[in-house]
Image 1 (spheres, rainbow, N blue to C red):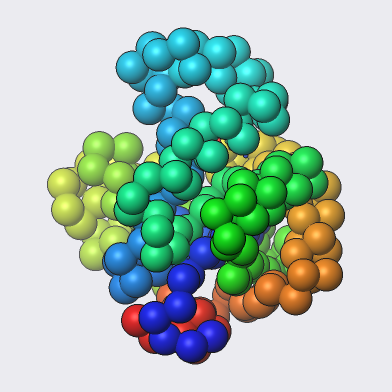
Image 2 (image 1 turned 30 degrees about the horizontal axis):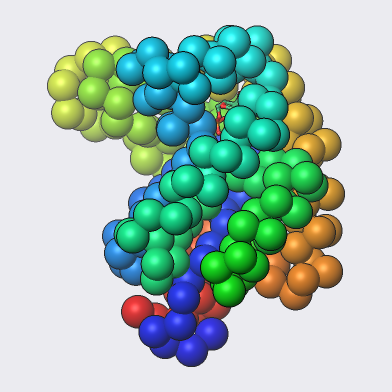
Length: 221
Ligand code: AMP
């Protein structure tokens, strides 16, 4: 992709693939707004807006918020001034009807998705990675017992708190999240492959290496 072109990007990846880390790097490097529908629903819920209350009913049960609610929210967000040179969509689309709706919304603006970044790794590798992940419940710092150990075993370098395995990183919950991703997201990857915009990256390479490859794909700023 040439420089200065719009960067209308979607990022997808199974849990533990490093989507959060790469998203942060991308939005910082390219000055794009990070549009995470999960974050938007969580903040609407916190503020108890009508949309938040409605979405909260579904989120509490781990279900998808209905398409008409989600699509309306994304359409409104994409019409904002800060999206005019591009955006990074995270957590949307999650279904084929959402992908179709997104296409129609962008087409109305004379735009389209330019890249779909897919972070990939074998389930076995992701399970091993997650089993080694520890977080600090106090400051949120993240560690790996494989390659990013704290200086003192079991203790957060930043705040001295005991580091823990997150509840939803326990093997039983993690497998459910992983299966869910595989079932729901694979059709979307195929959908965007037909559009010729998918780029897959090996999520097990280092953060720097994955980001360098992403930059090569989406072009420099
Ligand atoms: P996330 O943080 O992306 O896992 O999203 C948290 C919750 O928000 C999900 O479990 C859904 O209930 C809801 N949600 C986020 N994105 C979508 C979407 N694209 N479609 C429907 N529901 C969504």
